[in-house]
Length: 404
Image 1 (cartoon, rainbow, N blue to C red):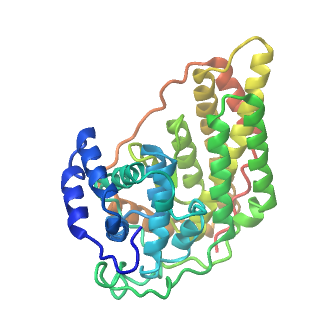
Image 2 (cartoon, rainbow, N blue to C red):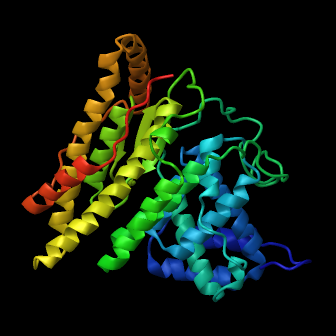
Image 3 (cartoon, one colour):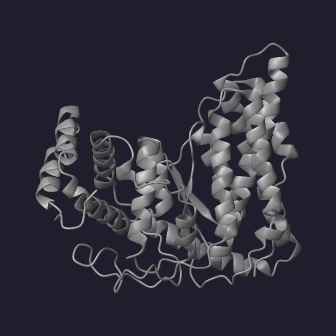
């Protein structure tokens, strides 16, 4: 950490970056980390460069939740904490982004109790920093997802005065009005990820039960799906993580939920998310219902596996894959029937639906001129399929609310 009266040394940072950022060799990483570890005066400059990399990711279409997801997927917890700190620091100089962005900032992993530079040896710390920066530098361009009504880039493109263009140190503008439901969804998804990762059935069931409790506590049901904000004139888009394992079945489930709520979804398998295009109130419904259905699926699958084990069968990957595939297929059938019911009851909705569908399709085609279709793979377990269908029949899919 730099001390008063000690000047930062961009030269050290530049030499370290030239050594490693464009090279994946471990020896190059060690050399660059040694350079930084030997020069405490370079810490401030190193942190400033990290915030520049974060601002660069925003310019390439990434959002806070996207960065968290890719860092968690590709690196480790120290990198994730470092990335969250950089995102928070950069937000103070960023332009207004809108409530969805704000909710993502609120959902960042908790900041460490002490300054990162005060924990562990300097060489390990420098290695973590360089591994993260190397990942940030290589992030591809994504389709921009500016929220409706968000000011365009201009006066606050993000960054520090003297290093990052524009901005002001007084705190982020427009970072108000975060949706409590979005923060709850982040916690629920984290619980589901832990339930999936544990090898202990009792722990998995307890984690799933806790997620279900949170869903109920925050009233993520038909009442919350009736979004309160008026629909904007044009459709927007959001990204929803599709986490491993069994991503394909989860992406199919998300696609079904999106279609039932007058949205369209495009799955990016390589980066672990689907982009959902639709009007804002419909996007909120998709996020909530998809998470609710995942919670219900995890709970039902844990119980079904317990019954299988009681009958002498061990937990298997094919059972879970087939369970989720059947669950997604059957839930999709139920959702389509539920979505069509209001239209059959009131044909006056048809022109409204048609105009919205045209708008959503147009936005989707501009964002993704070329898409391909895929088929579910690895569905071979009859017991898993049967249990998945039963769980889907019991799942609460809600009643699609009338359009505004």
